[in-house]
Length: 139
Image (cartoon, rainbow, N blue to C red; front, top):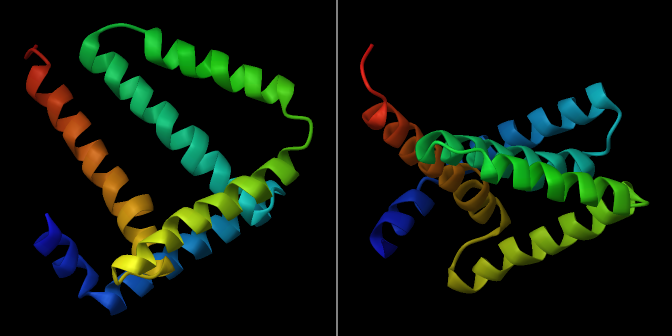
């Protein structure tokens, strides 16, 4: 696994491009929606991505418990969160701290962001979709 990570980290120009493209997309999305960049980032990575995984897992296991549970928790958060902008700023700062933790291992914020926030979700989506495809009976 370490050699795979080192291989991926060696593509720094590609990592910087992927990071820039993703950040630019999130900035455009924030302009379009009126949310701040930090709010969009939290909405995408704390809510949309995990909720989509819950949907896929529910499809795999043929029940609705995960997505319903996630919706209940999200509704509770929505009701209890009185200042989403402040919450998002704090959560974003904690996320940056987490990603910067990997600097100790020779990474940097851009590399860690691409690996953890883009590559890892792509791997998880791939595994989940392959599981769905392989378990779906033919018509």
